[in-house]
Length: 307
Image (tube, rainbow, N blue to C red; front, side, top):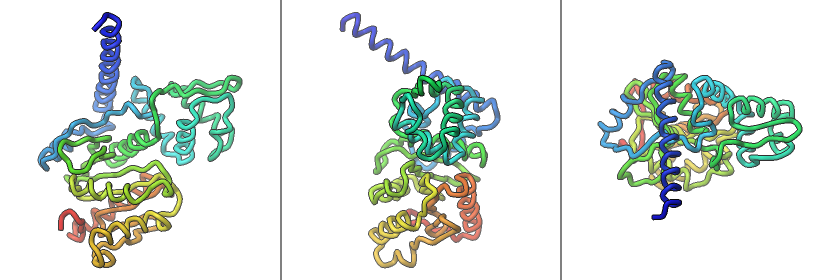
């Protein structure tokens, strides 16, 4: 190995260590702030269930600078609560640089887009001026998915005081891929699959993979969250109904029926929930968790992997 190659390798290792140190610093800040419960009880619960974690919370694809302070994370989290901002971020990732903001105004007005850009500039996420346009400064972010997973994880920590981990990889599971959000609620294990695509971008394999992961993880409650204000009944309910029929045959129409909880929230036996964003992500998740707890205490929750 020549000197130049060795130097390049060392520089790469130093950069990786810098990122990991930054993540560790952010984690310590969270613990000291008191806003984020320690994940240790959740990690213990997973270990007691025989699940070995390879990695989690590897947030290199999240649209935040690695050195973001707790205050900056709070600001970004509060912005993500707005559906229009989340749509704006999708477009920003798709069109990371331009001299005008037209491409960012599909779901918000130009004044709102400029306001969002100025706030993102204060967070070190973009550079922006009215004359030169904007440029996304965070490199390597291919999609909104990891940022949305981070946001949902933050919801569980901030709203429900739940120990939570995101982007989880397990060792020796039959189903590949990451587990998006795993949380612990009153000793109950909760899993959330996060979809940043609208319903038209979600197909049968995604629903099948979600249910397959549940057999490996065996949570007490599971949510399939699609970040959209569109109706769930038109496609998502159909996909789940068809997948349950494929797995369980004719008994699916009675034993594993997809039932409306309220508005565009649906459930299967109060253990699996299909969730959208209309009327607020936190409010919708709260409705599902409240329904689960109510039926759990009455021993009325039934999930396929426990039968």
